[in-house]
Structure formats: structure tokens, C-alpha cells
Image (cartoon, rainbow, N blue to C red; front, side, top):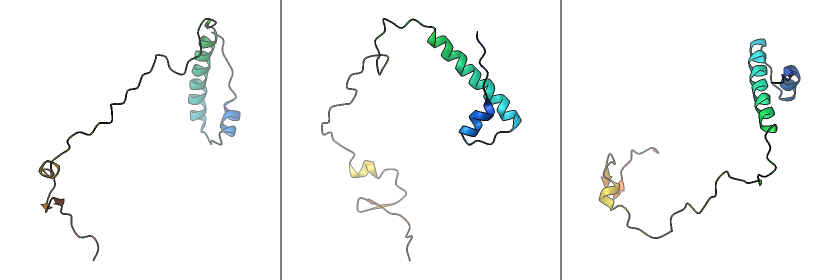
Length: 95
């Protein structure tokens, strides 16, 4: 595996990040792993693969917009701490 040198100081400067020495070592190692993975992807022969936006075909996953019965007022207010005339009663917040 080819090892790619990363100028982490330059990357940090471009990203306007102030990194400690420990952070520089950590991020340099992580960026190195990302670049190694990209080298593996670049080595793949993808000549017969057509570009796609998704890895599998998508179909309409939405339900039909059909009216359906909703909650009754009693069901909707079942967990309300207090209710009156089919409405939730809340404490007064404005004097």
C-alpha cells in the first residue's frame, strides 16, 4: 500500500483549525486511512459500470394520499394533563 504524506499543518491552515500536536497526529493518521481507501477504490476496474445516483433502483415509497379517519377528541386528549371542551388546558403564562 502506497503511503501518502499529508501536510497536516497546511490542511489545518486551509480549514482554519488550530490543532494541538496530538490532534495533528490523530487527524493525519485518519486522513492517511481515507487516502489509502481512495487508492483502493481508484484501483477498481469500473469501465463496465454505468454511473448511478443510487446503488439500487428506487420507486415511489410514499403512500397514496387518501383521507383516513383520525383520532376522536377523546383519543387525542387521552394523555393530556387537563382538558376542557375538547381542548388541552395549559397553565396561564401571560399575566
